[in-house]
Image (tube, rainbow, N blue to C red):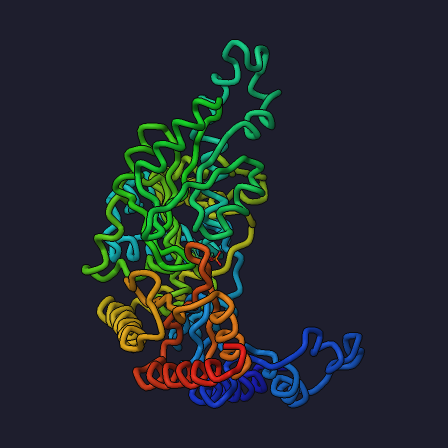
Amino acid sequence: MDAAEFRRRGREMVDYVADYLENIEQRPVYPDLEPGYLRSLIPSEAPLEPESYEDVMKDVERVIMPGITHWHSPYFFAYFPAASSYPAMLADMLCGAIGCIGFSWAASPACTELETVMLDWLGKMLQLPECFIAGTDGHGGGVIQGTASEATLISLLAAQRYKSLKEQHSYLCRPNRLQHCGPTTCSLWVFSLMLPVLLPKAHSSVERAALIGGVMMRKVPTDKTYAVGGHMLKQMVEEDKAAGFIPFYFCATLGTTPSCAFDHTTELGPICNDENMWMHIDAAYAGSAFICPEFRPLLNGIEFADSFNFNPHKWLLVNFDCSAMWVKKRTDIIGAFKMEPLYLKHENQESALTTVLFASSWVLQHWQIPLGRRFRSLKLWFVFRMYGLKGLQAHIRKQVALAKEFESLVRADKRFEICAEVIMGLVCFRLKGSNELNQNLLKKITKSQEIHLVPCQLSGRFVLRFAICARTTESRHIQQAWRHITQLTFELLQEPSH
Ligand SMILES: Cc1ncc(COP(=O)(O)O)c(C=O)c1O
């Protein structure tokens, strides 16, 4: 493909994408396929000779589209949203064209510099405490990770390597422990004895981070709103210390995955600080809402945190992947992961002018697991400028209002109950009755392919989650979804077994 053909195909692709998104609600939101459907539709080996673009595009409709769950259909209400907007898609095209691998300032100065400035812009939109903003002389700062899971893992590893290393070592060297342990001989031992603490409704990514980090974990019980409060954490920390463990890391969640509950960070933060535990706050979904002053109080307590993360790629109209992470002291994180082979050094690295921006702290590859990094901040820049803070706030508010609309429809039907407070764009509801009844209702919903939901478990009960996801979801889609649910409920209740 030469540039002339690329221009032509590019225009066609933009039309294809716009048509796809404009007409997406005509497609069944959820595919009706058996696992393994695709293998039989395409050859078992890559082609030897080049094929035409037309043939490839024909197969997009024949092979790919039937196997797509349409996340951007206004009838998609599953999981949490995957953000999408035209400005972000255009920025991603440009990112692909520039195609730089921005691991260091020299590898593409704009890539590093725009990212640091965008994370400051975003941090200010959220009114993060000054200590998280890099500015030109701050000690904190932000970075774009691929996912919230990576942010959690990075923070856990940083906490493990840095924050508590001294205490662990002195602890192990106490009488009756490991008498002759030197820092280089016992590191594995040290880590295996440490105990991060997390909450039962925490996302599985937190559990996985602990598994990868090779540390032990315990889950903190939640209150009746499915949130963790200070006294529960305090009690567990005391128990763990009495049992000879060293709690060193706690992950609070603002907007839990099952029910969008908010841990009480103003109570949890001081405990973590007193115990010298690293507090990470995971607000993967709900974090976007903190750009609205009315939701910002839910972020109170952030001042106690060592790191904070949320996904603009969930709810801030920035296409996947873009997970924003801030740390209070960037040396904690960089110190844990810094590697500087000669081929990554550049002449501006040590210059006096570059002490803050270009010094090793801003070699963003030190802040993450991979070496390579895409120019993801372009997406933020395009979206922030083309929506403005007001446009983004309007998007959040509209989706919360749609969730409230759905909530009132559920509340008005005495056969149903709401299972958790509706604070953001998620409604947890169920038919009054057995788990089996609700499982059967969900099966019918999924089979219908008209709307898509997923379940969760709250206090042992099978609950349906209705999350407002697509940017284009309107009131008429909510009303239609509810009509559909009540129709399927009617059919279900007619069945002899019920
Ligand atoms: C609270 C919470 N944390 C973490 C995650 C994982 O996000 P990611 O896919 O970016 O790792 C999710 C996903 O929905 C989530 O809801």
